[in-house]
Image 1 (cartoon, one colour):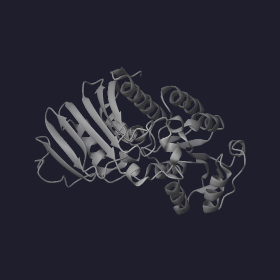
Image 2 (image 1 turned 120 degrees about the vertical axis):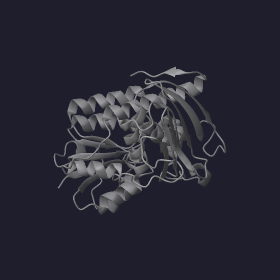
Image 3 (image 1 turned 180 degrees about the vertical axis):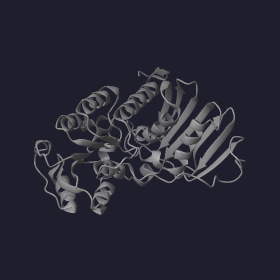
Image 4 (image 1 turned 60 degrees about the horizontal axis):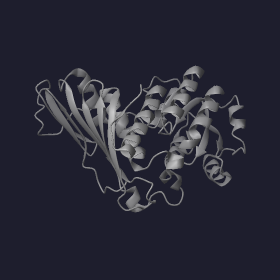
Length: 334
């Protein structure tokens, strides 16, 4: 049975991660660490695991095969590099890094160590997005010309981050605000479907100023892909709903997604794809990204996010924020 440790308990997804770990009978949690002893003790008690004072004891423990890093983003580089050098398999909550430099340093460390890697891009596994990617690859839409992704909720309106998760509203610790926090999911989907990004521009805004003037609460980006496609990316903490979450246009068809569940598609390459009724035959959902990591630790063949994929998403998001700050287009390094 694989044995893991929870390293860092800061992220808002930690309660869900802990529940998933508690529900698994094929994984054992050996330790829980966080720089805040009270936070570590809380989740260690839930998992019936010790909470060592020093993270080095986890790196030195040969029984720990994998680690789940859910620390503040600015702590990722130190923890990921140390874990990789210790030969631990890695699940790292998104985003991997604050930007290109630290994310690529982590990617090199993971690659050199040859360990498993996974990050929290859970939306890849949704049936609607799996379907769109499959149909793009099959040529159903011809040449894809435009795409739009929207990832939004009302966290700022409900003040979801106070008190336990306020670090996620501090750009110094999180590297970004709402546009990056949620937009990184949409960015991953766009790059997963359309490939590498060449140039970006963006605009960020504050609506209710729940977390001060430096924390963006919504944003819109435009991305030019190396294959010529254009895409727009929207993300927000101040939306009550996002009914249309994806739109796609091509030279031979189009599609849109309602609520991440229903896909309407029109193309002469698909029988009965008239765009008037939801497509009835979507692929099954993948398990959650963390579940896939735990499955991989158990020796199962599952789809994981590559570490260089995760690093490039951080690089593109950093470019989007720079473009918003400078009010211009920014080229993206490969």
